[in-house]
Amino acid sequence: MSSVPARTGRQRQRYEDNLRLVSGCIPYRWTKDNTDQMGETREIIEVLMVSSPKRDDLVFPKGGWEDDETVTEAACREALEEAGVKGILREIPLGIWEFRSKTSQDLCSVEGGCRGYMFALEVTEELETWPEQKNHARQWLNIKDAFKLSRYDWMCNALEAFLRVMAEDRKPENQDQNVELEPPSIVEDMPECQSMSPNCYKRSSTMQHHGMPPKANLLSRATREIAIHFGY
Image: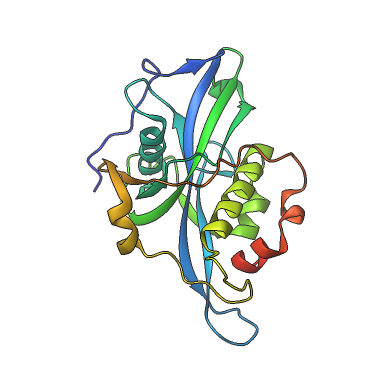
């Protein structure tokens, strides 16, 4: 059972340009799938989303970035509190998005605006119980379903940036794109990770920050290479 209570209140909340600063992540894992046309098992990527209290939708774990933690520590904390997962966090954000709260009961600031930093988190541990379990049920989804259930443009943008990072990671030099790629090894990656907190590790990366993709029908714009890798 998790002994770490969820943080409440906004006494330590960070603000910038009159926007509430938010940090979150897209938790992911590699899993086996038996839908290959040749009858062979392949590996696909799944992402974790959580339910919203009092609303009929799914979101990625995220929450306020507080003044006693780094933005990456905040992302790890939110993943633990809302989704009950720990893992390896990529230190470069997938992007920074500004969005407005849709309900007056959940205002991000006086004007309802948020500036959110999103990261990719490779899940290495799922807890049986977690601090906000009563308010947030978790669900693993394939990429296609995650796009369908992402009701906001910024969530789709974050997913697309996530897929591009994953595709780049899984493409060794001189590797033919039609060959199935093996997932990165958690054991091999751990020595490269810098311990951040009991919740996760931070993986250093030389990958460029992808920033915010333009708004569009993101699923239809996904490249053929990404579609091959992630099965949609």
